[in-house]
Length: 331
Length: 268
Image (cartoon, rainbow over all chains, first blue to last red):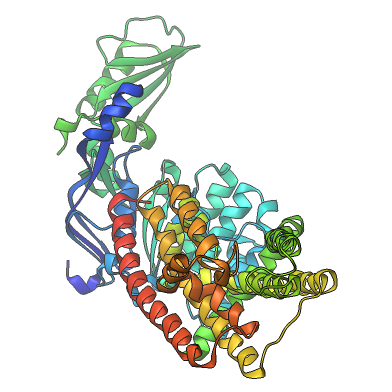
């Protein structure tokens, strides 16, 4: 991958926090005045990957895996302990104006809009902060209003908006300067399914329209499935997987599930595979992928079956299995 | 380039005014804050003057009235409160949001500072009239001294902002900023001429006041407005203000760099 093609390049990026520790109680509090115990916590442990211009990548990991720390390093809020990060050719921690003007970090739980006044007033300020020409600002605002259905929301005080409405305004505010790189940290957290879908569609459209690069973290796999062909999975600070979403499923879910409808579900299926559920004429079996054809054949031959379907493991379950990997077991 | 900055400042001040307009009750409380303490000191010193034969070290009740009326104005113009806000800003993520913008966060604070002061003029002007009606201040100020008051109070405001903002950076290292701020404001009480005009302080305290920055923030402009600075001492006063500002800015830049480095190391 050539450097010019990459919007984000990370090499051996590492972030270690020093955490002070003490036991509970007054005695421990007094002792800690004299000698403070501290230990190093590796939040991000030597990760490397890159993201192409215009690519949308899902950045996945359980809580505390190092996702937000990485995004903060990429947006210049945190200095890496070691290693290198470059975004659009800039070193983020230098916080150069040209860099900050071309990227955005949206955090689902953080607000940039001023609480007491309508969002449009904050937008106007952003126009001056990012020095967006008036014509371009008007055009972008119109597009954002249309795509996110902002309409009347813009003139209401932000404190009177619902969580979903506020999030839409937050996203619009973060994109008025048409950033070329978007770091989205849980942009749909706490939103209902309709609003999640709306924001997903919007991100996809923004990417298509402006060729923007998107690095997205989300706990909702629907977000990732809808937007990202490629995922990077981080766990315990290290990269566990980097590749196509379908390859992730292949690698971490060597099973398929077979749904069988039959007259009598109380038969012994032990010989065919692992029984996941058994209720009202339906049995769900988990079988190794390689055995799927053989087991299906045997089931059809040996039992009186009304219906049989074979499915891949749902992506949520795959991710659950990936996140359950012990630290030593990583690839 | 200057046009871009002017446009940013105009937008930020407009926005800050819009936000501050939302807090009408708070404005009433801030009015008390502006008026109350100069009024208390004025009443105390007037009583002292009356009970000691009409003057204290040459200050008559009308002189005290003039002193505290001007002090109220100067205090308003030089006021800074950002050191109370930074701990919250850092803890609640506001600092991270500010650092993501292609703009030094000090600009937002300067704008807020200016907009609050513009807004509170609506309160300050009636307060000054109230003082004039109630306490009958007497001014014996030559014109040149009254004119010199204007740059002096603006420089005083700049100095107070630079030092106060540098102090606000302490929040990047400690969450116990109340102790530091209290120390600062106690020093200000004595050495800025708040508790009493500096002329009334013992000689050694006047000397300390001369080498600390507080006199140059508040007392010096007040002294000019009252015509209490000798013509030959005026330039020295401006030089002290300028030197403190330059020194303050140099310290501020270093401290800000260290603060960002600190913030970026431990996370916000």
